Length: 155
Image 1 (cartoon, rainbow, N blue to C red):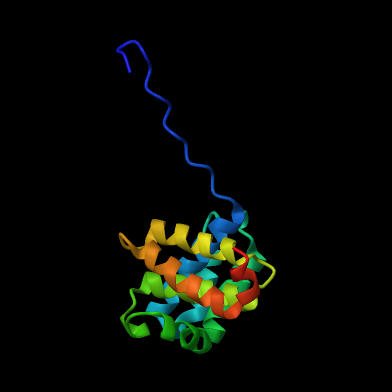
Image 2 (spheres, one colour):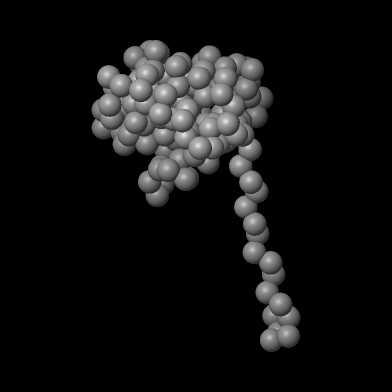
């Protein structure tokens, strides 16, 4: 590039859609619940009071948070054989994302598995550790092959 040429414009990130923002808020809420399991109702109520909540998909938020908090034991049983450590040793962020991803893969069959995994990976990039998104991707991909074999094989 010569001195007279302008640098290429920086890519502006696409704005997050309501469903991504909803999943992010759900992960934050699940994370808080993991740290304070006796306060699920209060944590969910507080999340709904956040200023940006009206922009979110409230029905999806409720389905995700309620599904994880009610079904956490079964969801943990689903992911336990797929991880390289005990569930209790997962970071709370990875734990929350994996629980939500497992819920969506098993209970929200109307959402394509690739969308579920991609959303979980993108959320892990925002909230997780350096390579946490790769870990999330691997675990949820293996789970998708188990719970949605016909859909996962067609990739």
